[in-house]
Image (cartoon, rainbow, N blue to C red):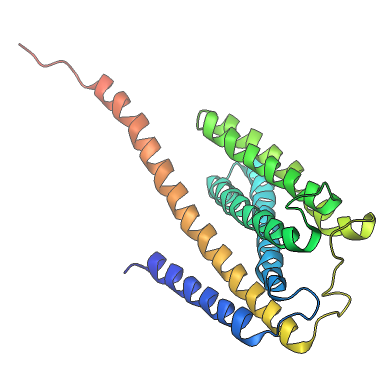
Length: 231
């Protein structure tokens, strides 16, 4: 087992601990019932997505200033993992909304801005996929990633800026009993560790992909320079 597999196993073990806390330690909510347990992973995934998109932001700024390829690889890794966690956030939110609101989806400010966030960074990944690898694609993607981050505070503060159907910031308002609050912070910490491991593993994949690309580009050049055999 290499170090990446060990990190992945450790992150998976932490998520199992978080799952045990969610289902065995945290009490059942009096009003919402068992479906409230979705809250712990739903919110933690959203925070993990914010962190991943912050990696894209910082990586994009560094790349535009210095064209550091390491920063670009981290940005690519952060974007992919961020989209994964945003997807989890949306799906978990929809599963919660059906029994509570009676519908999987409403065009609420929080839900809509989160969907826009997903579209922006899915577009970032699409730009990287369809563009030829190189400086121009990296710079274009960096601009998309930087401006896309503007939607992160919009998502986060949407429940306070506008009247929304989505619940308000219950952590800030101290609306959770001690056991629920402990479970939330444990789940958030485990989810952030998982996100960090996923970004690091993805960064390694991006590095190997770049190396293979450089080798593939170098081989035709070397072949073209080889002299023809003398008859």
